[in-house]
Amino acid sequence: MPEEFAKALDDRAGPEAEVRVIDLPAGRTVHVCTETTLDYHVWMPGDAGFLHLAFSMPLSGTQGSMGNLCDAIAQSLRWIPGSGHDEVPA
Image 1 (cartoon, rainbow, N blue to C red):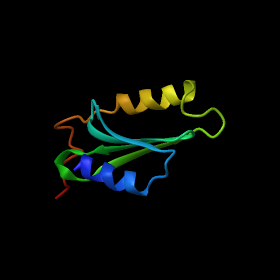
Image 2: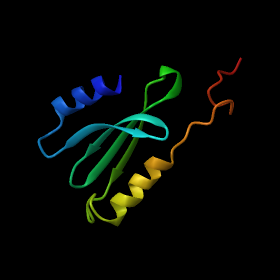
Image 3: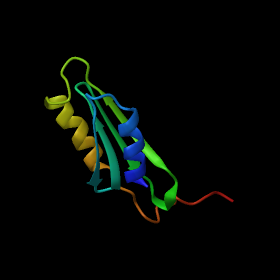
Image 4: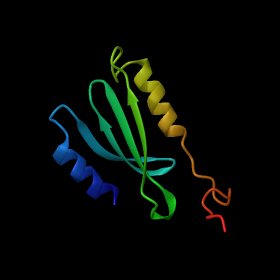
């Protein structure tokens, strides 16, 4: 599914955007990078869809320390099995 979503995003994104599928600790992720924005579309467990992490750095850009911080935040995402968050209340 992430590969199909990446293709759809790539078709819509401008030429300045880099769209690729990467592996994060939380799973397969569609990563979209422009000069000033970073987007991570993380596939959620149970085929629930994508979690969208969106970061904007209009002053410093994505290649600076703020871009590194945003990448570290995305890399820190984990799903905790059995935490009760994946259970539907009765």
